[in-house]
Image 1 (tube, rainbow, N blue to C red):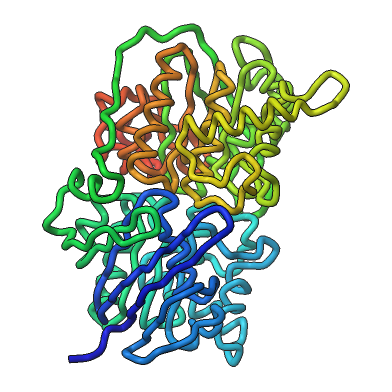
Image 2 (tube, helix red, strand yellow; image 1 turned 90 degrees about the vertical axis):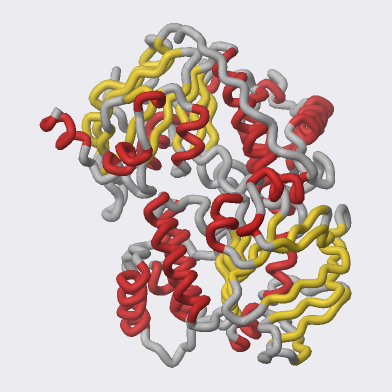
Length: 504
C-alpha cells in the first residue's frame, strides 16, 4: 500500500477575530478527488492556503507521501508537486497570460516555450487560453482558465481547486471534469472546493465537511443527496424560494441600438443591443464569459459613457452619457462581477466600503456620518449573515462568499428602482445563495426591475422571468423562462438564435 499523498494532523490557525482552523485532520490518497465542503467562512480557503504554503499554521503537522514536511512558501509547495487555483485570482493585470504562467514555472523554459505549452494544454483539455492576451483584457471566466492551465502545466501530484467552476459554462464544466478524472487516473490527488452540491456528488470520491473551522463529518458523496450534504454543511436544508406571479410595471430600462467599439484589441464590439426591462420583473443574461457582458455592464452602469444619446433610457430619461453617481441618484444600482477591486476596496473596512455607493451617508458639507456608516455596516452583517470581525474588518479579510453577501446586501438595502447584478452568487454557499436569490425575488415583488448576468444557468432558470443570451457582442431575442430549455439556451450561446428563427 502506498502512503497517503497528503495527511494533515491537528492543523490550527488563529486570526485576531476568528479561529479559522481548529484541530483539522485530513487524509488524501493518490488518484482521489476529495471534496472539502463547508459554508462561507468555515475555514476551507485558509486550510488550502496552509497546504499550499501561503499561510503558516499555528499548530499541527503536514505529511507529504508519508514524510513530515514544512511548507513555508508556494514555491516550496510547487517543488513538492502541489499546485493551487485560487478563488480570487493571483494574476498580474499588466502582464500577458503567458508571462503570468511563466512566473510560476521552471525558469529554464523560455517565454516562447511556455506560450507553446499553454496552447498545447489548452487544446488537450479544452480550456481556451490565448497566451498573448494581457490579463486586464480578460473576463473573469477567461482568467479562471489561465489559472487552471497554469496549474496543469506543472504536472502536479496534488491539485487544489478553490471554486473552479464558479464562472464556467456547463459545457466548460463538463470538459473540466473530463480533465480532472484523467488527472486522477494518472495518480494525481485533487482537493476540490465547491458549493455546487451536484458537482461534488458527480465528481468526487470522498468528502470532508468543515463547520466553524472543525471537521464535522466525512462521507462518500455519491451516496448522499443534495439535502443531506446541505444538512452536514449548514445544519439545515436551504430555504425554498417563494415565487409569486405579478404584473410587470412600467418600463424601467430601455436600450435601443446600442453599439460600441471595443476598448481593447481583445474585446468584442457591442452590436445593436436592444432590450427592455419593466419594474417587477427579472431579466437574465446568459452567455459564455467574454462575449461582451462586461462591455454592456460598463455602458449600463456608467463606467463607459460613450453610448449615443438616447440609446440608454432609465424611466424614459436619457442616461446614455450620465455618470454612475447621476444614475444611482435616479435609482440604478450595480453589483460588478469583480468583488475585490471594483465591488469593494480590499484595504478598507466594511464600514468605509459602504460609502462607495451610499452617498446618503455623506453630509452636505462633505462630512461623513460615521455613526450611520457603522450602523449600516453592522446591520448588513447581521441581515445577510456575513461572517466578519465586525464593521471595522477590512474587505480582504473576508472569505469570497461573505464579501459577496456584503456587497450584494449593500445594494439591495439601498432600495433601488433598477438593480443590475453580475454573478450574484459566485462562490457563495448553498444557504447564502438561497438567501441572496430570495432577496432578489423580494425586490422584484416590491416593484424593482432586475437585470441579472450569470453563467450559472440553474440560477437564471430559478429566479428569472425572461432570458436573453449574449454571444459575440450581440443579444438574442428574449424568451420566457417557462418556455426555454437548457439545450436551447446552450445552443443560443453559440449565436445560433438566427438559425433557429430562419427554420421556424
